[in-house]
Image (tube, rainbow, N blue to C red; front, side):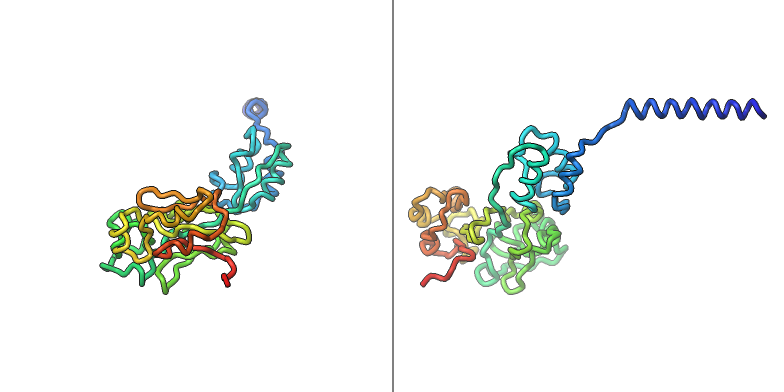
Length: 271
């Protein structure tokens, strides 16, 4: 009996020594800056930074030689300055962004041509056919983006059938962009006083076809292009696009658009 107890004690002691040696050999020491970065990050875990969560983003910041390509859309420049201070690096100034829905096809402008009777899911409908209207590029209005947004910034307007963005809740995480199968949601520069101008259409059909499908479609007429003196507007595949990094918010392009598809948001009313 004493022999068994002795052998058991020796086995336990040897195992403890082995476990201790192995734990020391494979010990992974965590950089204390990771915890400090986590403390200043918003903790939204939205994935807008390109990483699965704030913890992964903090680790990426520690390992990166530069923070130029790293940004937290929820926290913005203020948070990145704090992270940069922890890392002993310089933070890059970023312009706040917000989601923009590039579709003007309301129920009046883009009437239904058929009725879908199936799963209420944009991804499913998009994989089956173009949708309930003659425009295959527009918003399907089934709310995949609404479900994807964890900040309550997206909702469907029952009067227009289009998704809308609640500006005071949008943190530019990009979840809605990824969720939209039609790719009509874009992250754009928020602009001073939240003022911005963009072409609210993604229809790439030729003018006559696009206009027949939707009264509010871009017809690629180039009138806005001729009005812009800053080189902010381009025409490609029958569709106009405004570069928010070049746009000076002069608004000359807005009245030039014959279909009213260029949207101006949060500007004071002109006299």
